[in-house]
Length: 307
Image (cartoon, rainbow, N blue to C red; front, side):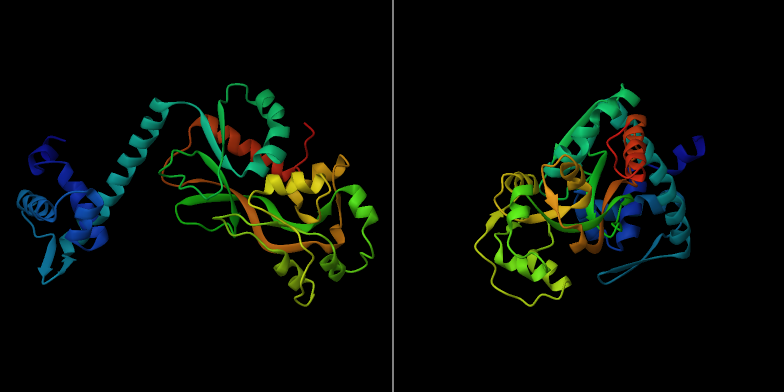
């Protein structure tokens, strides 16, 4: 380390160099680091003078790494990556030991809450913060340990494990389901009052897509009810306000309790799923690992509530 101290005027120069090399621009590096572009140029120049080599070929509005610069960039980026991960992990541990889980209101209320007793029995030292959101948060920058996302399971910067495939079928209050007229085909639902989910940010399947999946020509359904939160949709369905989408992993327990009735023979498997995700950049604290592993185990056991 004595030699490193002699070679480098400032360790900050390594951060500036890594950003400039990764982004291929002194200007973009300045923007990312929130400093002026001349400060980037000066830092690179001082680093080159300290090392005694040229790291960048400079031309009009363009920079390219030299051979020495390419080799140096590889080693510096790996080293700074390790330092960043260690610093973030220590910082997170120093801030708190609670686990923040970001989910939709419906997932929190109908999937997580009924299972919390089991989590607390198995992991009594876990301090869980259940955070609901109507959007997909940036877990890396918002201090979120774990989150549930809908999609294909592939997102940059996160690892993912499938909690439940997306399976949708019609649901309604049991009395409404029993008294509905002529529900022999999916097309007959066009004549029933439908409850629509219209979230303001996240994309969700629609009744039009569901009908199209079953080959039902576009029609004009009866007047219905439109809500922006799936927890409200379920409450309205249980109250007998109409037919709604039932996401299997959320509604199975409500159906078992007799609060809802379903037509599972009209299930639509969309190809998407609901995934538990966590950052690849920030190591999870032990308590977050416990919650992650517990949720994965619950999903593999068929989402059963039993302990």
